Image: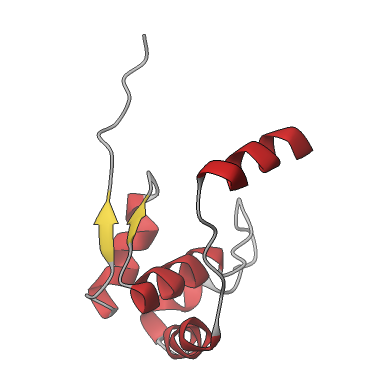
Length: 95
């Protein structure tokens, strides 16, 4: 795992959650339409820890695009924060 991470960090830029992104993340967390991305509802199949909101906040604050196959959550974020630029790959069909 550490070799993979070293290789990844050697070829990709990792953007920090800086003050500008943190302020935007706070605004996102205050939006009722996005609360389900921050808090896990009882009975949920997977926990929601706010990672998608943090990724979106970093991208918006840096005027960067998010490339993701998680179209549903990021499109929801973009409805409230239209400055979010998305790159969504086409679905991969099974071989």
